[in-house]
Image 1 (cartoon, one colour):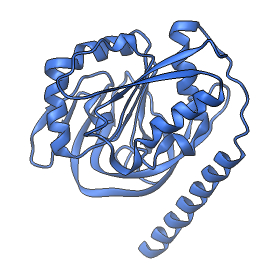
Image 2 (tube, one colour):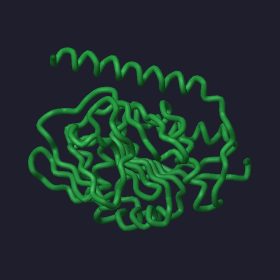
Image 3 (cartoon, one colour):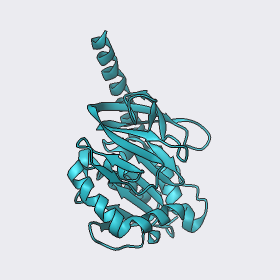
Image 4 (cartoon, helix red, strand yellow):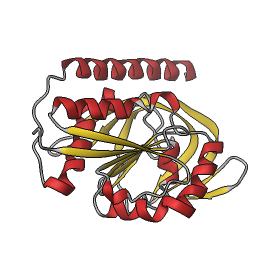
Length: 257
């Protein structure tokens, strides 16, 4: 597979990098290396005009309201149209927390300000009066053929709701998810994923990393079967995170009772 290449866009790495989100770029590029795939990473920040269709994979991490306000303006005035067109053309994208919120219809802050989103994902978010924080486990059907679990760490007060044009990334087994009410977490549309999974997410969930790699290759090369990797260490980390989440949630429930 040495002739395969993926062009990666790390969007706003200087502004959106909460809770180790940069680790997603590290995990993505390292697994590409293990699969024999070359990667080229370009960092893109405020006021830079780019054609996102030139990339194969776009990543954007989470940030606080102040950073989201600055990025909201940049999206609306500089980058939004190109990013939306790239997703429609099949470019793979992963947005975490604040990025996930800005990919939707809008994000309403705790002060009542409504930040317009890009409407790439049919979701909307409104600030709530409690933080939803802790380890989370969910079951996702994005993996071809069978359901798989995802683990991560969520820390958000925004409550996100899904419209009919997206499907949930997963169904919550342990934790809060999108809004703490409907049992969903994240959203998926075409090859774009939005999620609240910090931690960072991809090192703990190798199957999701490989799915994003496969999606990134598909637009240029067609369907590609990735090589088999020895994921024993990654699976042990995944299982440990799942056990910790279940134990913590069990203690919380016991405390409530």
